[in-house]
Image (cartoon, rainbow, N blue to C red; front, side):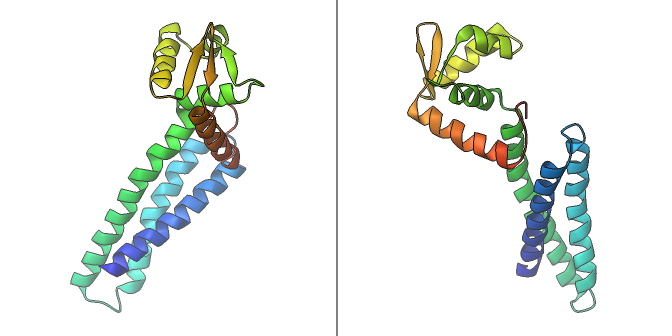
Length: 168
């Protein structure tokens, strides 16, 4: 069982590194397709690794190794992908980053509305972020709180490291 978990962990590490390389080296328009291929290669890699082990272990042990490897890889991928797509596509994170880039951590509501498609969407997002302590409303503008500044800086660093660019 431990061998299967180790194989799943090892291939996830290889795939996450490969995913970073894809992010650093490819145009945003092709990243989704290449990323899917990379994640599929992880499954193929696990199977090939287990084929190499098949001469040394029983078929029963190999089946358990395969199950443990696939479950480990799948479970960790299920944790990684929502985090990745939150960083890439979250309107709340984009709003925090926009606020963080302003000299006074403040942005008029009108500028936020211009950036996003819907006035209602902006109102709901900003109200939720205010309720959770990320921003405060001062007159006709939203201002980052210390908590909001921390999250914006953290995710801006991640987006920069992943070379996601302004829109994700």
